[in-house]
Amino acid sequence: MDVTLHIELFKRQNCIESVLSHPTFAFCTQELLWGLAFANYKHGRKVIQITDQETRQYFYDRLFFCGRYEVFPGPPVHVSNTAVVVMTYDHGICAQVFHEYKSADRQLNFRGFIQCNKIIERVQDIKGNQKR
Image (cartoon, rainbow, N blue to C red; front, top):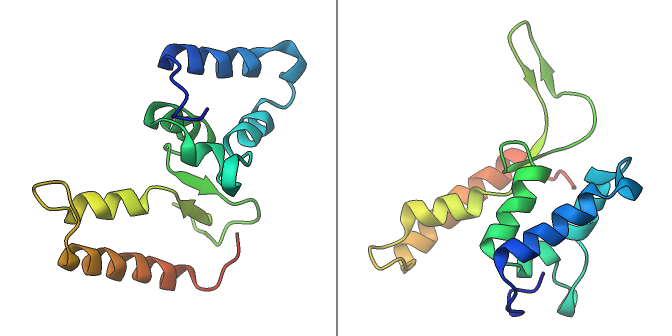
């Protein structure tokens, strides 16, 4: 999974799909996928952090609602006739605010950095002291 290992993308993803589709793991495919994505690698980093962008997106698309939101188990925080609200963790918020405030040369200047932090801080305040 390490991006520094030069393996063709289709081979990397075929390997993951082969393991996940093996009959031995038919009853626990989601748990296995989670275990692969969040296994510790060198220096305590998770596989999902050190792999290539395409493989990371492959994991996100299969693990998270809309490829982005990790839905927490437990009862909904709100239920009405038209909606059910559940607690989630947004795995895409940092990338989103970076893309909104990056400069033309794809860098984040000081002003953009401050703006990003204000948004992320506001998101954190909304979440409160919830533990994952």
